[in-house]
Length: 107
Image 1 (cartoon, rainbow, N blue to C red):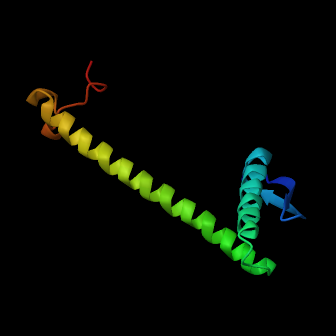
Image 2: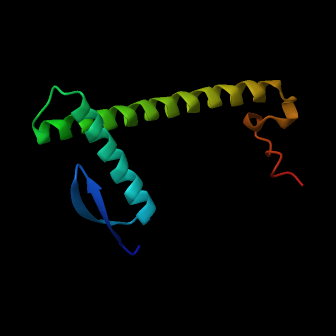
């Protein structure tokens, strides 16, 4: 079992004590990102209620997450297509799909 790390952070001008499986630096960086998103939502000037600002900040961070996941999926798809193309260019005896060992398994 991983030991919990306790760290105090400030988000939206309020202090929170967090217990995390991650490092203190990680927890602080996450808290700073949330605080930054809150400040950006507050700067829009159209929302006064704290809970609504928090919801807008959560939506902004969720949008970032979704975009990062989509970019990761697109990259994985491109890499997979490149692997297929590279394998096609290999001599038949070197192709993994032919049931032969990969170069790292040969010796």
